[in-house]
Image (cartoon, rainbow, N blue to C red; front, side, top):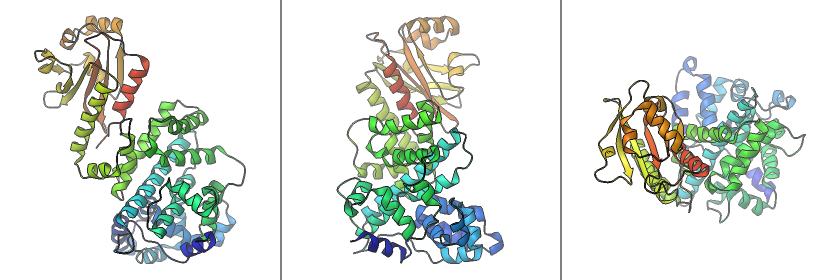
Length: 442
């Protein structure tokens, strides 16, 4: 198909939205006009790029927007239309569902996954702009949500999955770089022209546009593997631009993926967070991700912890690994998982009390980690007189707390208590990184 004709076909029809979004839209619009919440409608649009697209194309030709080079906020768009017109328009939207002979289930799942990545990019650019001291963030938030839409429509239009990365496949099919295609998409579908300021290739480069570009690239490429340097390079560039450390920039990625996963419009919205939790190695099939989605949150955490412990033992080569789970009733830590303990080890039965001023009480006061070389280990034992230190030997160790939301879940402890091998900085960093990636459920 020819690009101009395809874009015209997109502009000539209305597109469905995610079923979960439609359910909430119907509830919101069914209320009496005086009870309809403007912020609620705006948030619904921001939660589903397909609904946002439906709203913005309806106001894109407004003379007020044509005179203004900036992209409108969603609330501005709703007010431009008026609440009555918005609710009438939304009452006519349909749900994106599989249809025999029309839309394939796998295609819909992949589309939802790309919409979820757009949400991650939106949250991420918002956080990165805030770190940079920028207060105007919603225009970039909206731009990030819309970035993947042409590719999503390409999938729906063809109803088949490409053999290469999606954006690359779209560009190859039309013989045009994706950013250029995106510009033509904005113009052809009647979206507010102010979006071209952020998403267009013209105009002077700006830190805002650069962070938007990096956020979109980071969110879209999570699937390639968080441990691969081509992916981490973008975060490093963003960190330098913001003048913050890599860890701080990376924490924003985790927070963005987690924020999207907490309120998913489709199961695929959780995939970016799950992809950040994968262990280095071969990328798992999508079926594994889908199967994990049906587990309870508690079961997911248990499964991920067991996988993490195997990784600590097999890949990082720690000789002893303990997970001490927090017992709220007894206000103590008790062994839940272990690798490397002898059958007779007292650590199997020891309850580590969290008396005020004790080492573990101080450690578990907040999310943190601690690396104790042999000399520091000796000083800790002398200072705290904790029974735990009587049973671990004199070698160095590392510990890190695990919190779910703001609640203490337990403590990971690792050492090389058999050989006495040192814990080098790279291994310690990988240990911290692994524990950080465990999900934080409410």
